Image 1 (tube, rainbow, N blue to C red):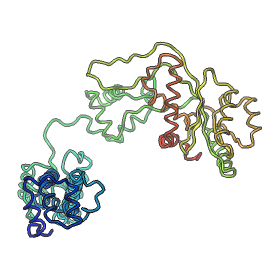
Image 2 (cartoon, helix red, strand yellow; image 1 turned 180 degrees about the vertical axis):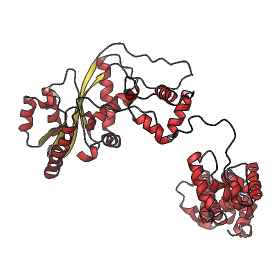
Image 3 (cartoon, rainbow, N blue to C red; image 1 turned 90 degrees about the horizontal axis):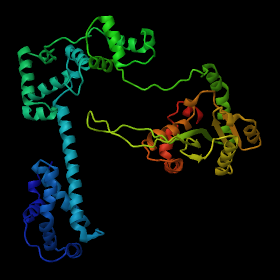
Image 4 (cartoon, rainbow, N blue to C red; image 1 turned 180 degrees about the horizontal axis):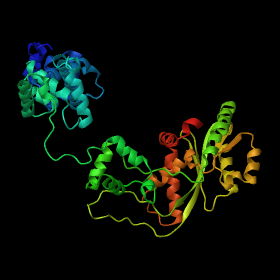
Length: 480
């Protein structure tokens, strides 16, 4: 970078940054004089008036004195170029503050990039070192410890080489975010072993880990077996159940927390399973994919139709409670109504983020399904519609079938039995109940109906949210 101390303009700017009285003229008048008459005294007055503020902004962003001067100079150079084009010259102070801040940020980013390039030039990667121990130890480090917790062998080698290349220990320690004493210890070990062998990670002392002989594959083999095969009533694994099995098989006394840590190290996590119905027929599902799905795609393609997935639900007056932060040991309380009741609701969603819904005061029958299909046709008066729905009785009744047969623009297909996971509209109800209506304070059916209508209306006005909800379904990509 050029020596900014030799720049005549910088000398002029630095010489004028002295707090003093700058007259009673406004910023707008001083800018006009400078822009129209090229009045140097007017520009000097502007620099004297706002220079300390600009210099303070640059110093708060930058640490290096030369970078501060560069940013200070850049801010007033911009003012020299744009003095006559400011739309609101009376707000010159605000404008200079923003220009100075942006200039300082840019210079700081350039300095960071420059230091990174210098670091790459001075500190070669251990991949370029003809040392077989580097590759072996790096692999061992990555397997045996977290990179965020301990410096890897590669980091230690590069740090030592940087110091040997002439960089100060303090600068290298700051660059790698380590303590200076740690770096001195690495240097001592490097000199003691006369090479990078001394930088290999040393195993700490202490009691050996329990269950160390169990590999991640063995932990997974236990968890992937149903818990019922080990004598438990259900197939779900809990830390307590795993603890019982491990202690019985290995005869080792360990705590449940140790079991949890070992499971996490094996790449396992505690999850809530999705429902899979006993009545679901895998053969029927495969037949649907083989025969019905191509018909849906063909109808969409041939008629340039819009695809909707339809479903019904019941919104309960009993609120679902979510989790919240509270004092440990003091479980918070949430007041909800003790009354029972529900509101039937029907909706249809498509891949473009469109949601059509209706709420009812009574149980949904074939009449309500027909009315809803009419609403969909009314929403798209000139387009063919493909509607995918489940095999609920109102969907497959003679009355509904007769209505569908009489509609030239309506093409309805039914999902396999007990396949709610294949209906994207089910995700709408999941989001509504577990997110939008979680912990609601409605006390009557009228209140919960009004609240649900407001929430569904808000959701219908957010296409991005609805597209995300739609494509959470496992077969959404196949249908679209």
